[in-house]
Image: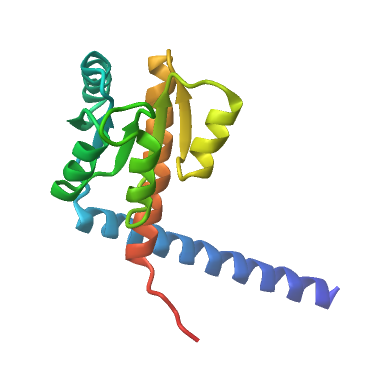
Length: 173
């Protein structure tokens, strides 16, 4: 019976220590988030159809996002170098530089979420887009609520990973 009480005390102490550690880490994460002063995420919308870009921009702005517009792959690369962007929505079929080629150039230096928004709806098109670096592939016509949910989901994961990398030191050895 004495061993049972020792184990219960040990478990109780372990749980208390664990809860204190969780509380400390949560407090530290809140402080790190406050220190970062994360502003509204910036989304780059790239499509050669100005009406589609305008509609998506309006939708995302209503959700509280800042939107930067580009109408071909080359313009998208320029906007990416000029701005701090947290997510890209890009069409596949565009003039000057198509969406897949643009995505490959972006992936050479950036790890931000890229969502392909395309009329190409064959499974092979989706697999190709995802294989070339897209984080998600949405076919046109799209459901606006689904588009916003996918944007929100990808941003949440990207922003949480950024916070983890900033707040936790890298340990070598």
